[in-house]
Amino acid sequence: MTIQGEYEPSPSKWVRDQVETYERTGGREANTLLDTGLPIIVVTTLGVRTGKVRKTPLMKVEHEGEYALVASMGGAPKHPVWYFNLRANPDAVLVQDGPEPFEVTVREVTGDERAAWWERSVAAYPPYADYQKKTDRVIPVLVASRR
Ligand code: F42
Image (tube, rainbow, N blue to C red; front, side, top):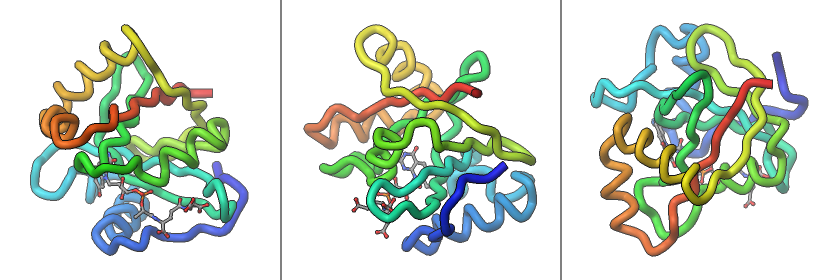
């Protein structure tokens, strides 16, 4: 399963290396955030300006077969760029959680639905709560569902 476009690896070396190892081993290696032991997924998006294929590791927040994608970027003041890629191209997205990527459709959640997913996100990765305290922006939560 692919998305049409040229793959442009992340400019950040640790992120690029994580994606490379995760893909090469079908998720058997590089499947946690650094040494936290907490699982990650790899999300493929299409660049909103370049049309290039981008691959972004995110924490795994799974519930009944759907996944939350939390645009936290460590509580930085700005949204990560992949968030805009997803908003612009919500149907050109893959999630890899194990050996093979699969197609998903992505939507941003709000209100009670966001609150429920936020609770699940913090349960999966408690530092998200600290990231929200660090920043004035409301951290976007998107939900990826299999197509
Ligand atoms: N980030 C999170 O926000 N949430 C997480 O849960 C999370 C978990 C995580 C786990 C493991 C890990 O290795 C990394 C993790 N990260 C997490 C970090 C995440 O993988 C991203 O590195 C981070 O969120 C920053 O995302 P970013 O998309 O802002 O990345 C920047 C550095 C980047 O790649 N920039 C590219 C560049 O060349 O500078 C551009 C990428 C791009 O998509 N460009 C678009 C295009 O059209 O191609 C648009 C460009 C534009 O300017 O409009």
